[in-house]
Length: 174
Image (cartoon, rainbow, N blue to C red; front, top):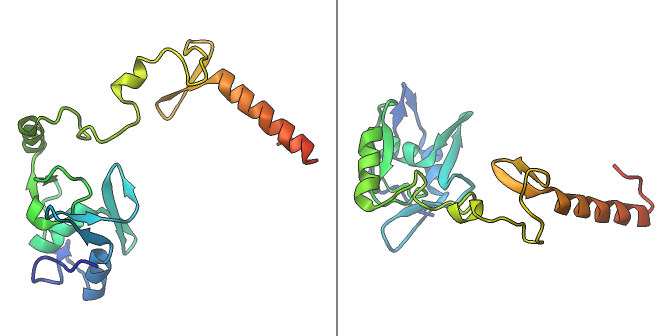
């Protein structure tokens, strides 16, 4: 468990006061790293931590800076100086505009919005002409699901194997 880096144990946003227990629960979901980052270790969306409190889901880094500063400007981003989206160390965070954030990416050589952290839909994937089984990615044999290409032939083979297995087990096909 990591303790809050600042001395304050309460904060507010829109007149809401956070209890010491709520703040302790927030920091219990973090781990300190040697590089100074305090990383969110619970389930994440797009690399950013999510903290649910009183029926509202907060981005963990926003909630951390809120606890540290006492309030946030909702029109501003909470940016990372460390380029680590799971970091919630308020010393590594600052409020900034979209322009500030883009300038930081440019200065650090980050070319993509996600800092090159995502593996899915990487540029090399779009150049592939065949699936891992060797079937062509063409109009007749390709469908898209969640922005990814999938092979119709492989899906048909997988379904045939699944149906055969269910038949052998004496189960009706779904």
